[in-house]
Image (cartoon, rainbow, N blue to C red):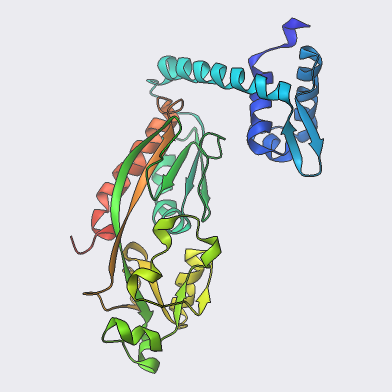
Length: 301
């Protein structure tokens, strides 16, 4: 029985722990769910204990599963360290790397540039996940995450990519219809577009109250790209990153001298993955791409 207990079994175990659902874990591992289910069952049979409780909500660890988790994570750290030392310097970069990024940065800036990374490393499979939320690198939701602030805990390594500016923008046809505000207090007479308050996933995005006291958006979305499209359609004024709105000739910046915010993008990786060639090469590519386009992010600097 002991011969069937191997690292692949622990990788399957960790994938289910992190995904919480068998189908999601199987998709991440590139296997079908029946194969993964069999692997978990074999592991439980080998250890002669139940590792998960199954329900319609997903898989939850039992007390014995919690004990195995600590050991499995330690083994994973050792395995990744070995892989980084032995294969990290390989000239050939292969395998998959998943990037988790905010919707605006990921879609508008990073997506059009990833083809260059793929062309330089044909055996590298790049996965770009662009959703307005925080990514857990501890749960391996991504190999690389783009965040709005450095992490405060966990075995994570962060480096600042760039500051970026935000301004207040409107479509020209909106300004033709409603007139351009001349001071901040005039904004109370305009329609504002912004985030849904309870769905703001990072405090750095809660910037409407910083513009003028008692302002509240009249049309909201949890997605920055949706807000951008609303603004283009002439539905109101919106705080948008300059690297997005500043490239669109149909938009005009409003009150540029008095409404200007600065935020930052951070590149974050788990310390265990940092030395892996595919992670290191991808991280360096993102850093260089941002550096080459610095003027897009801080146009007034």
